[in-house]
Length: 251
Image 1 (cartoon, rainbow, N blue to C red):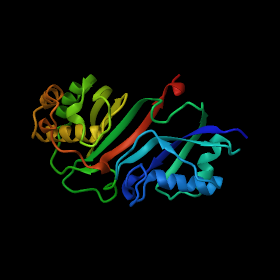
Image 2 (cartoon, rainbow, N blue to C red; image 1 turned 90 degrees about the vertical axis):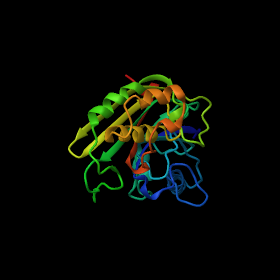
Image 3 (tube, rainbow, N blue to C red; image 1 turned 90 degrees about the horizontal axis):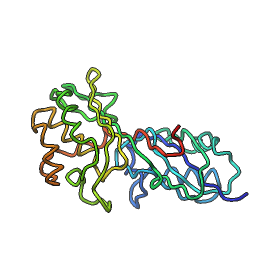
Image 4 (cartoon, one colour; image 1 turned 180 degrees about the vertical axis):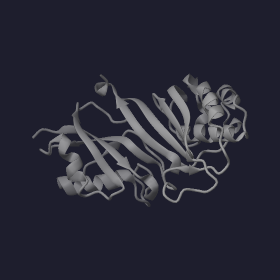
């Protein structure tokens, strides 16, 4: 059979992993998925992910492609691969895509969710899936400030050192901060993101919610390009790659 390119949707709890990308000295999601593919197909198969999530970051809708001559129907890959994967990684969908498709470079948009457990005491059940902030957050002020970041801007101040992006200009379509009981949720949707960009946004919004930074600090940071105008980089455990979008899936 001729070679086909398969696109997978993958969810994972990133707590036990060094991130998506292969590391020489620590387990990664990519490596674990490739090992499962090798067991299923009988040959090593390289997997290319849409987003290089960091250590401790989770995913509900990571996407990854690989090439194979296997006769396994694309929609059957979740059933095949989940037999060989640990319970904290699940393949939830598989589909055939054109040979020139690329999980990362063909992406039209991404959605990230950042969850904060805003209570005096950390959660025993959700400690790996939320960031704990014991001081009460003003989610209304956070949401109001967040709207300053929507649109197309130079997000140089919102990028951590070590990134490889050729430009720091990005477009955020939507950014919202909501509360449900003790959980404050930040949802960010954009065309692409810089290294640690969402965690830096979340950290700044947390400081705004605590009254440690003024709401206009985000505007100032966009203008200055200085990381020093913002607060902490929020912990990795609160971040989830929720969705990666492609034009061929749009209706």
